[in-house]
Amino acid sequence: MQVVDSVIGLRTRVKTWRSQNQIIAFVPTMGNLHQGHLSLVQKARELADKVVVSIFVNPLQFNDKSDLTNYPRTLQEDIHLLTELDCDLVFTPDDTVMYPQGMSLQTSVHVPGMDDKLCGLGRPGHFDGVATVVTKLFNMVQPDIAVFGEKDYQQLLLIRQLVHDLNIPVDIVGAPTHRESSGLAMSSRNNRLSDEERTQAALLHQQLQAIKAALENGETDLDALLNSAQTQLQENGFEPEYLELRKAQDLMLYQAGEKTAVRILIAARLGSVRLIDNILCDLA
Ligand code: PAF
View 1 (cartoon, rainbow, N blue to C red):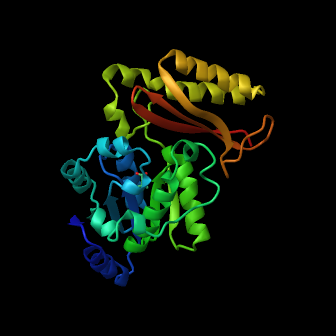
View 2: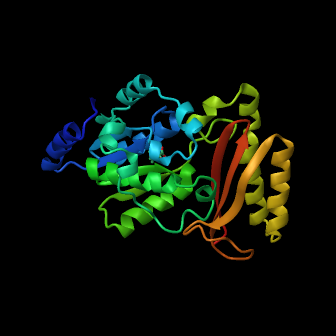
């Protein structure tokens, strides 16, 4: 496995693979890899001849400075894990490689229809930062396929829209959320939970499952359903940011009785840690 930190080093390697007609799959990450990321790399491995993983903590997508400062950086451990997974290349640019003119002079990519809902509301500028860095990474790596986790469901739809609107020739593959045995969705942020909080955090997924079961049983009072789940969460120390039912295809609000696939999406704080999760409830 090669580790490169420059665009030229990356391109040289990728160019050789392209000349050999190898299919290249790409997994962009911000490092601090856990089993969830590794399952994305495994998926990439199944789909392609060569696998590229990037590790870059992208300052442009952090609206909260302390979140950026506290984001765990574990490059050597990450590289070790990727070696064991038979990854072919790890791209580890720093801020000067990604934003040579500085972030304020960087051309920005904006995907419409994302800032006014879900994580877009609570994290102003976040999705422009994601769209910009992913566009740059796609242009640097030039993969055939890119794999993203369904845990960040809004991000996954944003990337699908981005490649469609900008005619970027990359197939976007969504991979299922990896969970701890308690049901808690795996996230680099879980490491910042105390032992007690980590146990409590399982309630997030339990509430999503309870909402799903109620919908499947024909519940139509959606406000009551969501309010009751929010109350349970508040009583157990969470500060919910949103808990919503949206159509899986386009994230438009779901209305009771519609026969469609629904995503139940949540963001909530537990102590100082912001957690997100979502599950599918197919009512089609
Ligand atoms: O999901 C993430 O880890 C990041 O948002 C991504 C896609 C690597 C862009 O920085």
